[in-house]
Image (tube, one colour):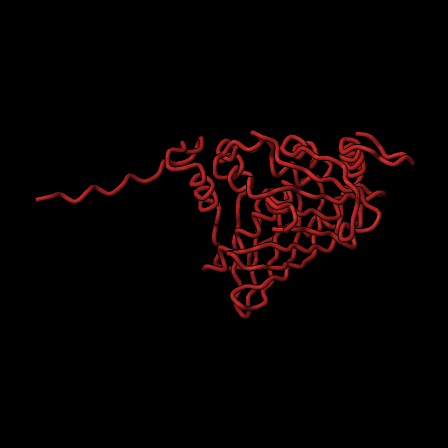
Length: 289
């Protein structure tokens, strides 16, 4: 069950990470972060689908972890992702599917065992958006053309020189979190651990090729995502983004747990989300003699 929850955390982090993460380019070199973001948004608006090989390096429960996989997306919100990742000392595989119904399915294969989870992403967002203090809709941010719209509200980006490791033929920007961009205390504390964000954007296609978060020293990477073999406007059947659990399969709905965790970030005094059922009453205290 522990690795089951870790998988959910990674899936949701990946989804939000992608979240956290307009002028058309001319022959002239773009000189400012604003020009780069405008160029990237304009180019990405012309892509209806895209696919890429995906690598994410991060620390999970204090241990380094590298995840490799393949990602397909069909705008605005359809996503298919398959990841190879270590789980409990074994090599596991997790497939995530998000379709028009905004249900994110997660199918985890670890040895002979298969675990199936689902998260109602739209419900989580609608029930908890006021608690997170974020100023964006993560589902909208899955549309790369809208990525910078929210990102520039959170980070103060500046263009910097490219260096080894940024990739070939890219613009590079570094950003610092703006004061007050995140109002939730715990999320703000977590964001404060990040010294800077560094993004590499393709010269020709405007696509984010690499995104890295650095610690407060601004030298040590604490999380990075990289996309390679990127292809645009490839034909992807809608059936790719539809999942039907096998008959008699045990499906765990993680939606209530995710909502509870997000409310817990705000503290016990946080109000319940609108239209959500109130928590059960506490059991009566034992009588004293």
